[in-house]
View 1 (cartoon, one colour):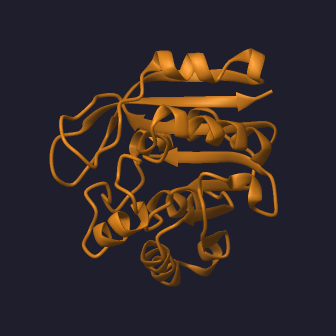
View 2 (cartoon, helix red, strand yellow):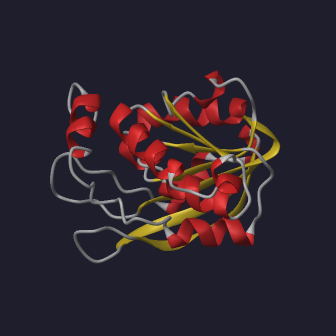
View 3 (tube, helix red, strand yellow):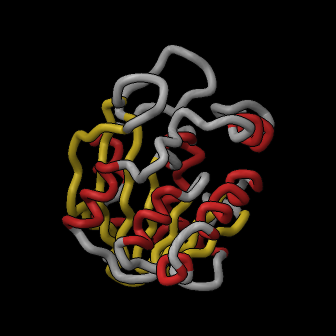
Length: 205
């Protein structure tokens, strides 16, 4: 069983009946800072995109972005937001219901994959196949941008802590990765102070 019960879709579908705690109505600043410091090549994929704020923020910066989430209501909310955008921004966006753990199944390869709060939803053993799939989904020199919790909470149905040591041990040169940036960051939320987190930009060699 995963961190969110036997039926994670049921759990997250229920979360999206209200405004999720991680939905702060704008992209996470730490992720946008990484994008600006290490600009990616188009197109971009937002895994676990939720209601689309990160993807929309990236499209407003000029990027072409596909957002994928397994919660249909989250994708519906994202598409509603797109409908209210200027046409030149909206045309750079696409939102699809799908499995963010398997980006290689999508029809194209990506210049970058962005991840705010997706990787940390899975136990370490479950996330290993995801890393392998990332490698297949990225173009050569494609980049993976990650923002994840760096602290563990003593409660159920919460993300796990991701350490800098874990990132270094799993995204290695032997596996075809190069870490361009890895540092402490903050993850904003609606229900309390920012959560201490880790941010990374990792390039596929």
